[in-house]
Image (tube, rainbow, N blue to C red; front, side):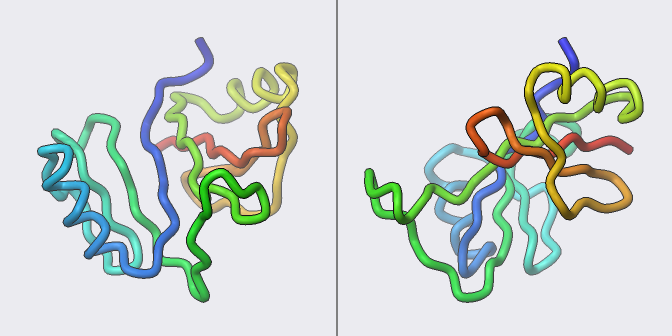
Length: 118
C-alpha cells in the first residue's frame, strides 16, 4: 500500500448546493466549507466527498466521452517523498498544478489524481 483513500473530488458550478444534495442522499455531514471547496463525510479525519467550483462548468453526459465525468481521487500519504517514486513506478505521470499539501498526477489511462499530505 502506498497511501490511503482520502477523498473523491467532484467539479461543479455550485459546491454548497451539490454538497447539500449529497449530504441528504448519503447521510453525511459538512466537514469543511470554504465556498469554492466543500467537503462532506462522517468525520473531518475520515475520507469524504469534496465539491470544487469550476468556472464555465460543462456537465458530463453519460456515456459520451466528449464530456468526461470530471472527478478525481485524493490519496493521503504520510511522506510525499517516499510515495511519489512509488506511484511513478506504477505508471503514473506528474501533471502541472499542486500546492503546499498536494501533488497532481495522471494514472496510466490519463485520469488525474492527487497525493495529499499534512
